[in-house]
Structure formats: C-alpha cells, structure tokens
Image 1 (cartoon, rainbow, N blue to C red):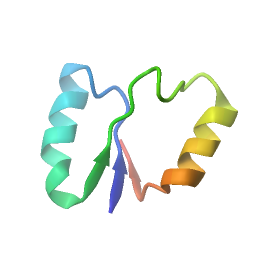
Image 2 (image 1 turned 90 degrees about the vertical axis):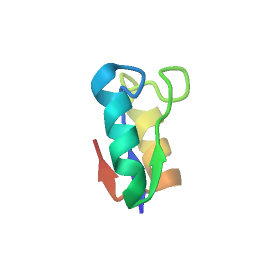
Image 3 (image 1 turned 180 degrees about the vertical axis):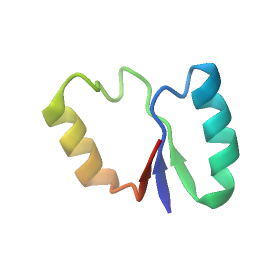
Length: 55
C-alpha cells in the first residue's frame, strides 16, 4: 500500500511516517518535491504514485 504523508519534516508528520511504515510504502515528499499550493502538480503526483491513503 502506498501512503502519502505531507508535512513529514514536522513533529506530527515525522511520527506518522514512523508509525505508518509498517502498513506499506510511505511517500514523504519534501516541499520542493511536492508543492501543495499548485493543484496541477499535486494531481500529477497523485496520478503517478496512486496512494491508497493520504495523511
């Protein structure tokens, strides 16, 4: 299962990555890798990686 975690450099995001890794592959892009303010970039990222869970 692909799991997308945004904000993984913060305290909560860091703990989510650590905790969710037992359930599958955790995708934890940096701000430079995924600009959440750009809808077309987000759409392309989601289409490419197809996460089953977004946290």
